[in-house]
Length: 132
Image 1 (cartoon, one colour):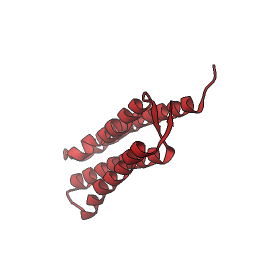
Image 2: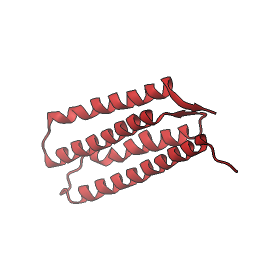
Image 3: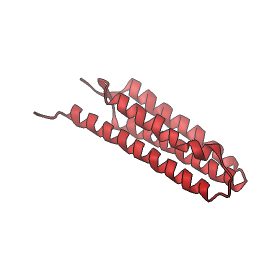
């Protein structure tokens, strides 16, 4: 049984999906511990931060690993950076909300996340790596 470059790429995308799943579990654990020590102050953006890597990372990776069309590496990098930017921005906003303050610089996270995810999605639609 020989493995082609397409099989290795599919395996890499599946591994990335599992990594995103573990990152979402770690983010949920971090949020839980952080909120346990926040003196009964909760932030919705902190509680739901685990959804970004789960829905934006794990789900697309497992779906793309089943499709015939694979993304090129730069597309994957842009998408991964966008998802992680969304998660970190949500954690940062949640920490600031728990602390009781705001910062206008947190508005940059959704803009950057949208730009990176849009670049990844357009890169996938325009320049795929391989067709089976």
